[in-house]
Image 1: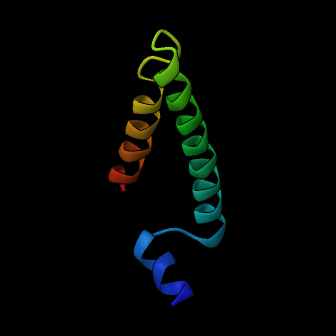
Image 2: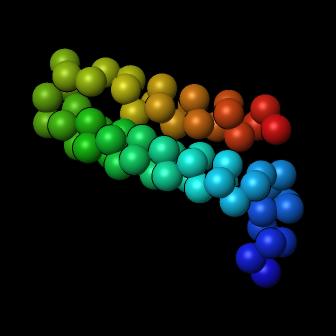
Length: 62
């Protein structure tokens, strides 16, 4: 099961680790900026949307 996901994603363990680790931190950042934006709309406009879109684009490239 462990290797099955790596094969399906087309990544090595290290490549998968790096992508997932960075994506996780970016998503946490996107969540925090989204919460701040909900309180003060002039701060972080479209920041979370741009982060999520960049991650989706990266995943869809493969």
